[in-house]
Length: 296
Image (cartoon, rainbow, N blue to C red; front, side, top):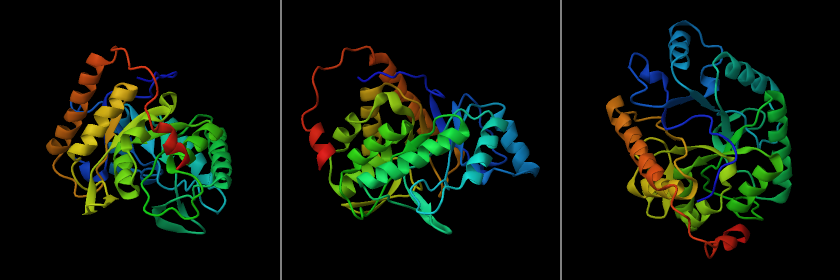
């Protein structure tokens, strides 16, 4: 098991807070922390603003951005970054994360598009991440994203991700479902990918459901329950890194809250199991084949 060199911003099992949940009751007994997209809440007042404030005063919060567009050819939206900085301070947010992708040029494209896996893109994206961190005066976590095409690919997804994290000196939001989806779509071993990630950069994890377009094509939707192979990969993540904080994402087809709480409880169960065995001495030596993932 790899070890961490910095404390986690939150602990336990979390849930993405959505506006459709207004009027519902969520307690610390059911979830340990909550997450919102800051763009959906910046400048929001009235009953929605009061409702959010009630929760940010009762729960630890993280934010997962949608619009930073870190790989876009257009200039970085520093106005947005400063608004996020103020939102983080106003609500005592514990971590800010974003997608390692882009979603805009001179306007929003309303989708998360893949950054070319090239050395030039590594330098470009890393410089933009460093600029965001300078403005925010804190580290950010970038999420490994799902993708369905790899234009201009010169290096593997894993090599690109590791290079960006290292050059930008930023953290990682580990999305377990995205590893599973990409492993099916692009035919690699999800466990070898997982085992190659730097433990000291992981801040927290996401787990979610997806849509089965075909046996060899999975679409990351956050619109369905988490399936067993993804739960198994989450358990393997805990084997590698310990019981890292993990959040359940659900963005549409949102069921009654008790059903979501059931999935959050499953995260907690796996975390408790991992805690019980985390002091077990790890096997020595590297896993065969990990190096091949870096250079494919």
